[in-house]
Length: 142
Image (cartoon, rainbow, N blue to C red):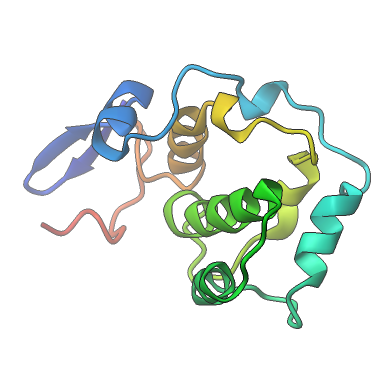
């Protein structure tokens, strides 16, 4: 699969994403995780720590800097949601899309997930790569 641009094409694979960003590859795919009917209690607690409905990456970074949380789950959540919001979801307003929260459990081993796979799948979904890649995406103009 490749991202076609006016100045050439860039190969987009899980391996390429891993080499470029250094994020975990080859673990458990999100497609194998059953979507929860309701969010995990601890995930809801994390979400409720924000006073607003739409959480921006800046708010997450500020939370990481301001809070000295000993619970690694919260630190992982802050980092993961910031990463997903910026690098995976491509939401034009830049706020967290809460849908991913229905796939996360308190005992989830974040380091065992295939984040490269998620990144590539989202790029396909938003048609940044592949045969039917949209014209005029932000990355097409070199």
